[in-house]
Image: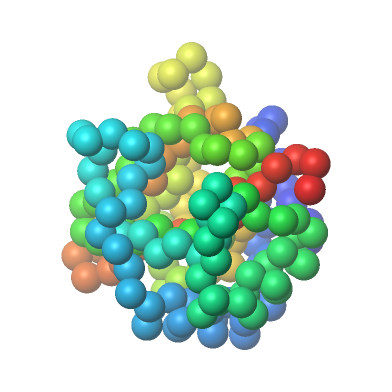
Length: 174
């Protein structure tokens, strides 16, 4: 996997995984039941969005429907996941700036039809809280970034689309 450094702490890799597997994974995601309860952090004011948990080590929970994908991604990234989940945002849904748990976050965009015109970029605060960097979803694009860099999902502006990102939270030592 060849990551390209965007700035310190943020890297991108296009065509990160086997295309066939990502397409199958995306179909499985779309046929799964999401919860309307996700948020960037625990705040009553935080806007909710669609959430599909896969792994949460804090509560010792694994979604057995995704065992094949868990194994594939852990082996491909050579990482054990602290948390692994899927976020979905429908029209106008977005997130708030936040830091992630863990040390490194990987975000995968699995939708082959998504493009910049549909919005839904991942925005990072990079300088003095008033300069940001946006990386837009693209099929099979993988972002890797320091979990302590504040970031958020920008609004999905596609009236009929579901902006999906797959989050892998890891620790540096594994």
